[in-house]
Each structure stands twice: as C-alpha cells, then as structure tokens.
Amino acid sequence: GWGAGRAPATRTGAEHHSNLLMLRCRVGMGYQTGSSTPKEMTVGDPDPYEASEALSSAGSHPILQSFPHGAIVVFDDELRYLAAGGLGLAEVGLSQSILEGNTIFDMYPPETVRLIEPLYRRALAGVESMIDVPYMGRIYLQRLGPVHDADRAIIAGMGFTQDVTAARAAELDLREERRRLHAAQAIGRLGSW
Image 1: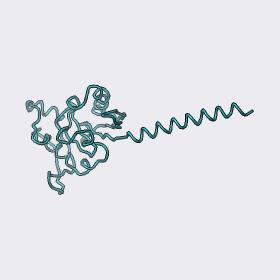
Image 2: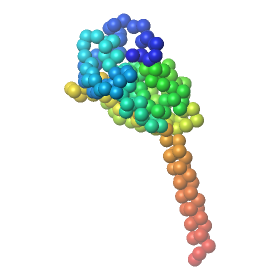
Image 3: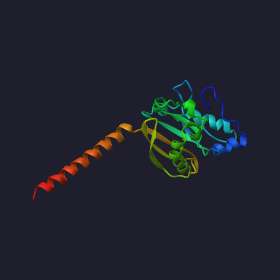
Image 4: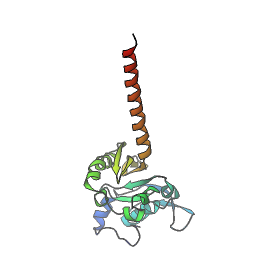
C-alpha cells in the first residue's frame, strides 16, 4: 500500500484516478508481501485504489529491494512515488514506506527539488535524461524516463538513483593529474630547444 500504517492523501476518487493517469497496463510480475512467489498483476479500470495497490506492491519486487548503492522509483504526474526500493535508501534515511505516497516536494529540500523536478517532468513528457545530484554530502546520478503502456502511451515515470561519489572523485583526481602532466610537459618543452 502507501507504506506502513499510512494512507494516501485525502482525495476524491476522480482526483486519485487522474493522479494514476488512468493506468491500464500490465505492471508485470509482482511479489506478495512476505512471499517469494510471484503473482501476475494487472492494472485496470475502474478501481484506482486497486491500481495504486498493484503499483505499490511492485515496490516489493526483489530487484527493487536489492538495487545496490541507490534506488529505483516509479512516479505519477504529481511526482508522487508509486513504488520505490533499493539498498541506497537507508543510507540517506529513506525507505519504501517513507517515499511511497509522497511527492518529491514532500521529501527533498528546495535546492534538490530545483535540480530534479525538470527531469521528472521530462520523463512524463517522454524524454530520458540524467543529472548528478548532490544530496546529504554525496553525489547521486539520477536517470529518469517514461513508463509506457502496451499502446505506447506514457502512464508514469521511472528511474534510478545511484551513489557515484567515489567515481566522481576519481574522475576529478584523474583530470587534475592530467592537468599537472600537461603543465609539466609544457615546462619541459620550454627548457629543450
């Protein structure tokens, strides 16, 4: 559902149905909570709360829960997390139950939202994009794109966030070493005729 002991924000059925983009797609293989047995889930009319439950239970899939050093998310047109998972969530004090049902505006400081909101909007417009996002003293690569139904209509956005702090530090060190090497080579050429 919407996380441990949490209910979705109060909305009319019509508003909630709109928020879920009238999902009419096959979500794929899900896993029932507490079970390792896959079950097929289908999202359809007319119950939007059933659709929400199906997408949220997709967050229990072992792939989402095992994603290393980051997170995988699915979000709607309000930028509300429908499913989330990954080992990196706990590293920044987050979890599936904290994210699901909340928007990026609920979860992140304004400076982070300013960086990531355009990517979320582009994903919902059908465009894949990525950016490095500084967050809590780390650097995270965020890559987002659209989720399509069988008719290629965009029904949600999804993506991943991966901690790339060590990789970016190594790239910076390498650039600095190259700069020093070029400077030393330039000085060496000055002394030889």
